[in-house]
Length: 445
Image (cartoon, rainbow, N blue to C red; front, top):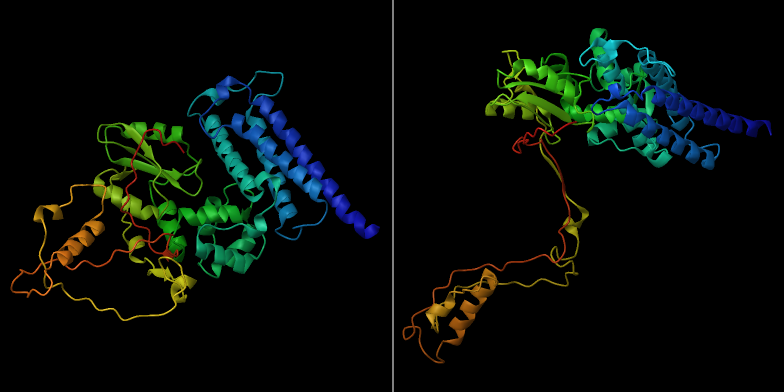
């Protein structure tokens, strides 16, 4: 009985912690009722009730599942402990900025766009947005999936599973040591900057979800930290923790300098970049380019004259070094390569026959004009077959080739059509920068 009491006591403590977090967020939601606090996405007024629903779903599923499950280090409960402690700390920071319940006394600076307090509130809203996305990714519909979460980039996924196993969260110091076995991390300020970039929720830990986002932003994997160093640490156009509205406001000062641009991680499409720039007519556009290395997008935009002045500065960093170390192409051949079935109809191959092709040397053509098909619904293959058929039928039995001029028909190879899709292959290659992102003013993210 004593041994069984432990898991039950742990489950009771877990449910109590989840309930306390729900009540804290509900109280915070009441404080955000002032319409002057309305802001563009991400908005606390939308995030708080959505996070409450997620926490309730987690509590319900965990309660129904009973004690046990992924409760080891880095497992479900370990993640929830880190998450709930961080949630409580961030909620208290937000509450300190907002007016308390039952009173309207708050600093006027909080309601002024661009003020210091407003910027602090916007940054906390971004952190809440990241926490909401992380919880939803690791507990979809309340059910834990961190032990089999799939990192988007194959090499990054292999690294995590090889070094971290089934864990979904690690303390930063431990993760830094593991990452150092593959990518050298300089201690001191560089390691601290890397932590602030990767730890989206500022919890002092790194989850597999945060690692996924980071490796998508700073792909490809072989030059991961070099990409991060050039694009985030040294590039004047990189902006962390900015929203769509913040980008619009920052670029207002450069409307008379077309080609000015800044870029930031998208807050609505995590793992993708959002780029804002001043168009040739002075308008400010924002775009989310297709998933791929950001360096290629910036170089292509530089050629087009869109991305010339990072944050209005005249010096545009040279990113060509990031494109020279592209990995070689690798093609995955499926198991059907050596199968004993036809690659088109998928029926079993029962034998092989030698086939020879000879040019047709004789025959007359009945009605040359009929050889031109005017029906667009018929394909070229059927027309060629009819041409050959008419030529053979028009030949006089027993006549010599000299009596009948030969029909000169071009050699047409048979066209095979597959009734079902061919076996799929997977290609891992450098992302092509050929598809250019089309900028739209409504590309908020």
